[in-house]
Length: 163
Length: 120
Length: 343
Image (cartoon, rainbow over the protein chains, first blue to last red):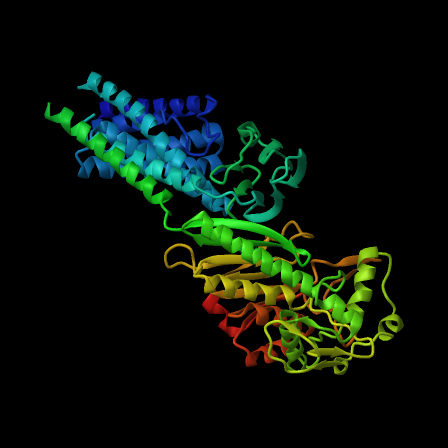
């Protein structure tokens, strides 16, 4: 890996970790309602996905989850597993959508946001032995649209500076 | 945004609203709150009366205090780092629920009891 | 420009889909539900009918009210009426309404089949228990209970075919009195169900406190879901309020249990279903539920089965086309094999 790319990815990773932790400090978006999240870190993930590719974004995404786990919420805590499942589902869905459909970065972002929340809901349901987590399904589906558009547009603007 | 994005947005919107409607359309059967701890039912509370009542159950981190009034239910006190479920406030419909993840406690409302009639 | 149009088209299609979905959800306009609650025979009776218009429903409710009221009066042991059970028990031999005569005959027919467990001549014993239940200050002694006569041989039934008043149809002797509590609700509910069918109302639910009778399902090809109350749901908050759901149409579901209409004295619970052999309330199980095509048979059988232990009951019901669910006192649930067709 060339040094330039390596340093850039490292900085982006650091940025995504910071954004994630900052987001957790904002009330309303810190998981009061499971699945409802602004997903600021997703801006970085999306950027990496478009600028470098799927492998790099998957790497950033998973490393981010572990780092936030170590630094902030605790490794292997409930929040960690929520974040991990959300991140995996989100990055895989975004990679597939980007590769196989004509959706723009905004559409990819919406999908990512949606699956991020879905992943969390599934883990909540497993942890609690209860289907009631799925009661949030309509809320998270509807919430994925604005948050997805927001992060999508921000990543798009970010990409312009690097073109 | 291209037109595929718009189609996607509309599809998600429709799915979301449809599920929302399906969840919302219940009937006016008596409401009952069900409190779970670690997946097991620990408390059932009839929500059809309007009195203020408090209940205390044992959560994973300590006591969880639940309060009902006017067909609504909320968590008043619980031991957790962020107190998210006491911040959430009241719920009153079956498509809402209170999830206290650190305490492994879930409060659900069952307003359909999903049968046509009950033999007593 | 082309893009702009496609956006408009997409929005319109989206809105149309939404409208269609909401219409489909709200559409159930073929028949409407009308319901009414009555209070007879010491219980709330809720009747729901699914008919196209309100007039049809109200006409039906009027007649249903009349049926339940008439049977309530005719089977009431404690209040005067015309040609009813009160008069019969008092006089021993008097003119009674043919509907009461038919019901007594039906109840009487169960005595032999149930080996004496369903005994309509138990009136004197249930009177004693009723008094103690209302006072809640004690329990009758065996000698007090043994003093009264509950011998079915003191009930003489003469075959009479009449659709009016019946004389000498039932003759009571040696102070024996009749109690129809074990069958009256299920029997009357059957009459109401038959009436609804006779006027073309096929879609209905009748719930007369422990006696449920349903007709065809009100929508599509589905089946009614009838929840059976958990006998311990009042005393144990951990227990779900319903322990089983029965799915079916044109069936009667009747539960007998010691958990309602009982009283507690010195820590013991005394139920309302009296075993004619011991003359004390039976306490073999928490509840028993009978599923049958006939509401009156289900009611009679649920009482009989409540008085038997499970194994005897399991043998006994082999002669009948019914399914049974026993809820034992330790919480275990036993069922007949055929119950799966209602699950």
